[in-house]
Image (cartoon, rainbow over the protein chains, first blue to last red):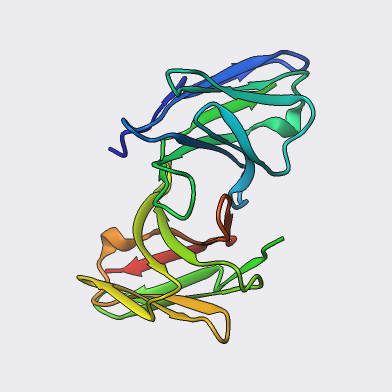
Length: 113
Length: 110
């Protein structure tokens, strides 16, 4: 168990809908990363937050947004969902977010039908 | 930005043999290189990492080597066991982001 908690584990929704994925980082970790992993694909970096502030942005679509709250949990919001958004979404946390170990949650499997 | 290439994409070895996975990176500013193991249906698990001021690091049957001049690093697993079967990802970090390789699916044949 990495100590990173993601909910829900599975999510099935229809095209055009909006969903929210939640991540609770390890105790004491200030940085949260979001990654997308499609079938047979690697880990695509979406966005990173550090202590409530956005620190780095990857290939995150405009339909996607995220935030980190004062209690350090993070949410990834996916809207106007398309079939191609079906994927595993992982959250990872690290103590400082600068060249320190990052620990992944178990992921949320999103299926858009 | 950083570009990490990983080879091979699939690897099959007999139980007890060694397995080697290689990665190259492009940005000389990268200074932290973790390796992750991902089992089916689970999140990536950090198994070993190395920083740019170190050339080699070992942890039991797992070792990682880094050649900063050539910009490549490798994962070595000795005395492989069936439970080592998984997808392995290398990554490089220049500071904030982790750039991942495309993964190596390792199968250890009993």
